[in-house]
Picture 1 (cartoon, rainbow, N blue to C red):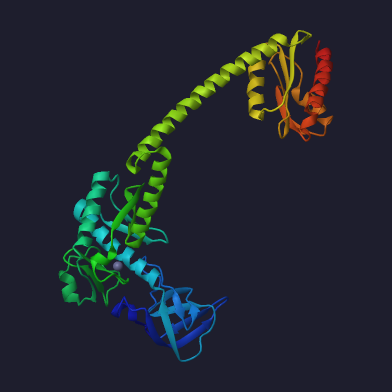
Picture 2 (cartoon, rainbow, N blue to C red):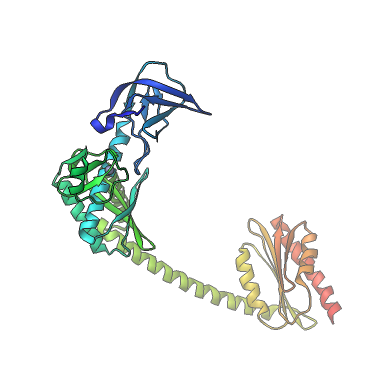
Length: 402
Ligand SMILES: [Zn+2]
């Protein structure tokens, strides 16, 4: 039996009484069919209502043919039951949904762009319009027309239309059903076949705010917020801008340009720092090389730093071994001990072997290529010991390779 849809008679009603017609036990919930209901099911892009039915929370509401099934945690007693719709959620859906009708028609009027998809999410709603590359001016024109309709406070009327009348209406899209076609009219502006719940006048939709757009192939996804959602978003953005403005000691409208300029300066400083760092390392490498003892014609730079990152060690080692006949045995203590051994291309020793012996002496592990190998020292205080073990192993290797 078809469930009587009370939300069609009065979308503003919040409480109702109904008779339980059927109940069906599912795995973790019970499906309940009533003779009539105010609970809107998931349909046409509008999410289902929540609230209480017989004191139980309504988990989900779906359409099954002409019937509406409510999902509850447990069975209801037989007979009559009382239902209360969560009004905050429902009215929010009505604002977004009615706002969508108005916005979609504004896209048609201003840009001849049709809505090809609608999604009503928890935080924002979207329409996909078949128009690519919308400019800021075009979006502003659409948004302004939509809000003009809101400020005109045009009546919104939903009613089932006879085929004769239907044929004469300038429908924005064709109906999906052939019988009992319900038309939602935003007075003298938009006529759409729709089974959702809507505000009774455009004014109740509140502000319609386009918050973001995203190109999707030949279409554009337009994110928008209506009514309370638009107010909450505006409030949050104002808070954020004021926060940024007061941190930068400027007004909210100066905050973003100033932050962008600051970011640009920061990037320049970073590039400058990078250059200076490179120059410092260059002279450090030269000094280390000049002071390095030579063995079999190979300069041996062995050094333990109190605190350097593995990255810094590697950069220094690469600068050193870019020269001919150099071996760099570097270590860093810091919070985690690190050891890095590298050699010039014209030195024959395998750094992997040298590293394995050196780290083996202190219980560490690592690896790399014959030219550059590195690894961690479990005890930072024993890094020097590992570097010394590496130095001895290297001496043997250099001696062998002569
Ligand atoms: Zn609708």
